[in-house]
Amino acid sequence: MSNQPNQDELLKELESMKYDEWLPAESKLVKVCLGLGIVLIVILVFISRTFFQ
Amino acid sequence: MEEKKKGILNEDWLAFWLASVLVLVSLFAFAGIDLLGWAIKVEEWIDFSKALGPAGKAYKGVISGGASLVITYVVLTVLLSIGIALLGGNVKRFIIGFFFVYWLSIVCWIAGHYAYFAATDPSKYNIPWSLKLTGEGGFIFALILGLIVGNLFPGFANSLNEALRAEFYIKTAIGIMGAILGLKAASALGMASVILFNGFCAIIVAYLIFWGLVYYMARRWFKFNREWAAPLASGISICGVSAAIATGGAIRARPVVPIMVSSLVVIFAVVELIILPFLAREFLWQEPMVAGAWMGLTVKTDGGAFASGAIVDALIRGKTEALTGIKYEPGWIFLAAATTKLFIDIFISIWAFVLAYVWCAMIECKPGERVSWAEIWNRFPKFVLAYALSFVLFLIISAPHAPKVQSVENKMKLVEAKIKLLEKEANATTDLAVKEKIMKEIESQKAQVNSLKAEIKDSADIVNKLRTATAGLDALRLIFFLVTFFAIGAITNFKKLWAEGLGKLAVVYFVALFGFIIWIGLLIAYLFFHGLKPPVIQ
Image (cartoon, rainbow over all chains, first blue to last red; front, side):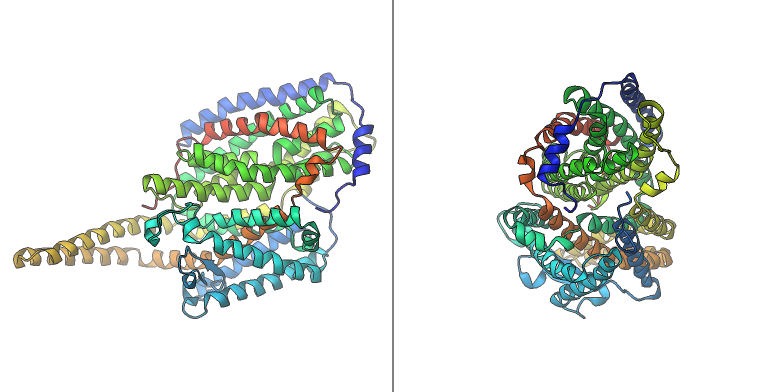
């Protein structure tokens, strides 16, 4: 509610935004997030079904 | 997350202290004094004279409903004005604003309890139909009225600004809620531990999958740079405003970035709040705990998530009762929403720390940047401590007694029902011998009830004191929820969605949220919560 940026500031910010090159480290970060997420789903659902039903 | 301080406290700490003080004050019930029982309680009504009354038994017949309404207003105004002074806010503007916020919200709350809107069993009131929204429909009315005020009367909404503190109200309500849920959890410890564990698991998985997907999408498809993509990913995928600001801080983005993301988060959370609970009522009423967890996982502000948890709790209980006659105990569906949301809040600080470390180690380390463990504590949402402490306190006090009392109360209900049947039989028969036999059986059943009562006398005494303590707390919690709904509506200005420049952000947000966050959230909630049902009252 407070601290809202005004329209000019908003436009300036978005216009001045330049695309950064996609780094291999970012690929790695996204892959680790998704991979770990999927592996953990399997493990945690197993634990949940086995010990917490 | 820690926000900037103008006064002695920030909103997070103020919510912690206010909730903690109210919970401690409620414990005077153990000295036989109900210090919060004056709080207003609204019942379903067809005759308005029966709508209002004080929450505490000790106050019933002593003060009228109207007096209770005014006392609640005065006490809250005084307490919150002290709070606003501690925040460094404008107390005079708050008092004027809160007058409108409170009374307009209360009108909605009372209207929401009108039997034609609320009753799950219209025949109870001799009326032909009802919307079956339960009394919590009043929350929806408050939200709608808030949206009307915020969008059609922006000047008036602006004058209420100081009192439109949705996040503060909901954080205080959640702190108080800890005590109520602690008592509830004690009578079903197994269920409570399952919800806690599954909620914890669900958010770990959701954090990783949501964040990775949204970050990839913002960077690769929508060509945002890293400074924008990371706060955007956190804002859309994790916990809206707090996560966007925490992530912005962690990767050293300029303040304008998370602020702009936050303004979108608030608007979309209201859209979710209006749509998702009703979707859940239609399609998930047979999986109530999945519905609760889904709200916690997908609605991206504290206010929005807890509010949608409360609505979905009411809507699903109402529908289940209307269709099957099964009456779920209130609060358990909300507990699933609250648990997932609270874990999300707790993990924001850890996630911000992890991101800060990853950014500095792998992506770009800005000059002078150091990653400190202290950041975890700095960004930790302090109101969660009030919730955790009051939950544990009430759980510890009630755990040795509540299950025993619950079990005996259930038995007593059965015996009492049997006595009623026997009495009907006795009245119907003319055969004296049969009547005498039935009367003997009734006496025997009554003796059984008395023996059961004696068996749990001490435990029942403690549980009754806790119920007295939580009755006043629950009434105040509902008022805090109510003003949250109104405030959320009043601070949401949909025109911002059409503001030039926000379009690209809004598109990313829309695609991510409705394209996969909501559906993956539903899948995760289903995997961890399906098959779980709240305890049944009857």
